Each structure stands twice: as C-alpha cells, then as structure tokens.
Image (cartoon, rainbow, N blue to C red; front, side, top):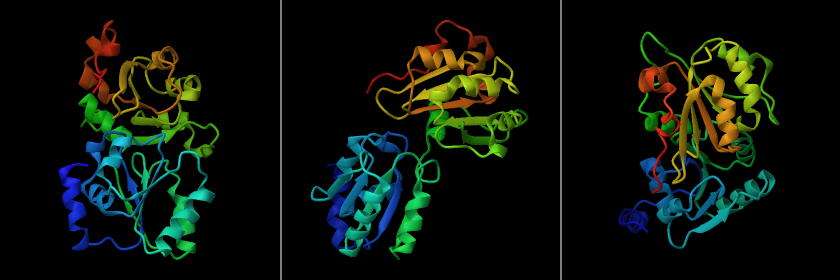
Length: 269
C-alpha cells in the first residue's frame, strides 16, 4: 500500500467515513486517474465492491489492508444491491467502484432507485471517462473553434436498444465530435451509418483498453474503421472517436502514412 494510502488510513480515527454507499468512478483503467476524493474513500472504506473484469487490481492497493473486497463481475444486480444494503445497515461504509464515470453506461440508475427505496444514503463520485482519457492520449481538443463545438457520447443499438430519435445516422448528421461506446460488435453497421454524413476520410481514433498497460490507439479514415477493428480482433472495451478535430491534431498528410496505425500505440508499462 502506498505511503499516501497509509497516511489516510491513520487519519481514519480523526475523520471517519459515515456508514453510507459511495458510487465511485474508477476512471478508464489507470489508477493515477482516480480523483483525490475517490482515493480518500478507498483508503478508509470498510467494504469495496468492484467489477474485477473492468477495473485493474492495482486500485485495490489504495484500500485498507483489512477492507472487505467483493468482486462483482459474476454477480447480478439482484445479488449486489442487497449485499451493499446489508453492509451499510451493519454500520459499514461501502465503496461501489464503477469503471469510467458513473454517469455513462454504468447501470447506476437501477442501483440508486433500489437504494432510495431502502432508504440507504448514497453519494456519487465522478470519474474520468474513456473519451476524456483518449483525447488526452491523442493530445487533441474535441471542440476546436471554427471546426467543431459539440461532443456527442452515444452507442449503436445492440442488445440494448437506442431510442429511434437517437439513431446513429441521425446523430452523425451533426458532424460533431462523436464518441462511440459499446459498439465494436456492430462496427460494420456503425460505419455505414456514419458514412451517410461524415466524409470517408474523416479521422477515427480506435481506442482499445485506454489507461491499461496493453492499450492501443489506431487512427484511420472512417471508411477503414470496420476493417481495422476486425484486423485487431477488437470485440469489447473499445471506444471510437470520430471527429474533424483529429485532422487538426494528426495532420491529413499523415493520415495515410503506412506507420500511422502505430503512431499512438503506447508502450507496455
């Protein structure tokens, strides 16, 4: 455990966390991208629940050595929520770690509803989302004056239906900086819908496991988005950034360079 975490543990007696549930955004994978508030809560909480398939083990180094760690990757919401409620009613503080930011595709709506019904106090702590971490890695601003001033965060319809008014081709018509989550399994369909409105040469950053040691970022023209996804065998944990702003960052002259696919590939930590 880090010296910082040990110091916070020592301070617990001075500043005890109220028995409550803290729904915490763990960020995209890099433990250094946790907020200070998230670190403080992890250092003093009695119970930590985390989706072990989406959140790196290193984050647990910030927890108290005697904290109860509950892995939730193979548990249903019906199992997780009563467990959290029981711990709080036993006067324990609980951190529920979610990957990324809780406001995006984290299924906290149902959890908060059930906690409210049970009259269990809870607080939500925001985290860095994958689209923010990807933009930082790419050294790009997604809102460039005179070029693009809107960011759309969305997904394509799959097992979870997207409302008709938010259908991908409709959103693509804005030609905004479009961040496409949870869509790798349907990428051919997504590419076709995007090509209805974006020029074929619009740069796309294909971002796999952002913030993890094995992260990869490929920048390709929109009409190569599906092919690159298949070649790299990307199925999950992939974010797509489709944006005119990427042209300003990468330079169109580099777009078709044979080495360009590897330009932003990170080294292993």
